[in-house]
Image (cartoon, rainbow, N blue to C red; front, side):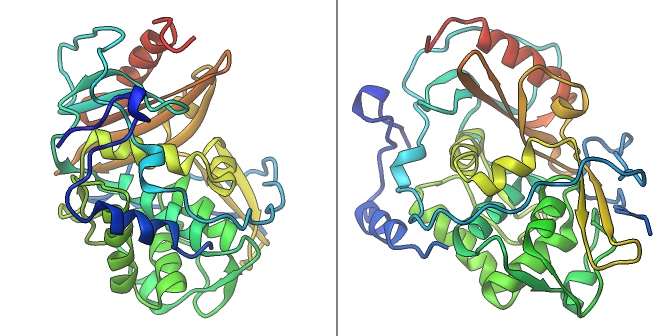
Length: 337
């Protein structure tokens, strides 16, 4: 599998049937104080021993949802990354991640790579696709009924979803992307597709439409080892996610306080993103993942001096530290200026 150069539009070469998949993609529908609690089992967390907790003290309230753009989902090739370019810099780690990529969010240019197409467990990086489908197929003022399925989750969760109540979809999107709530993922999946199995089918169809050949989903949240991807595919998903205003406005927050139908009327959430929690200059997203099988994973995004760079790390011994080093190198490389 190869990706075409930026001079050819930064597009990935497709397998047979790619034109049909692209057509399907273009036709895709557009679509009191309570603390949020989540448990570190074999689940998503920044690390197995360092688990962020939701604050119970008031913080800035999230801004009101914006109206949906009403535009069709981006074409498959539009977010491809260029694996034919020469790396802009070299960086070796004493204990390297199993795979990684540094890329330009605007152009798709790859600045550094390590096993970019190795297919590996991705843990809760799965939720990058979950969020994309929610943004593409729902409106920001929808309300989601909390079903029994959402409350039967394992691993990390928002932890305060009121069974049978209808809650704001944007609050669940925050719960999905900040504390990496598996309960929020299930609730959103059921809302979009009727049940989680049908939503997972939609995730896999969308991956095929986008030509993400490394990627396969078996759940909306990523707890299982069957959720697999590679750094190159995750970079493409990150580019798509960061084009969605509803996602961008969530993942840039270290903390959020949202109106929610629970005792006290507020849900307080904290991000797991080590770049945001460590005040990395220019950090604006995106998502962490952790299971014992996948190790610690991160897709991080930062913007400085008009450039937006991303880093994807799979099974990193210290994704926060390694992401900072890689992004620093990327911003100082001079490439893309």
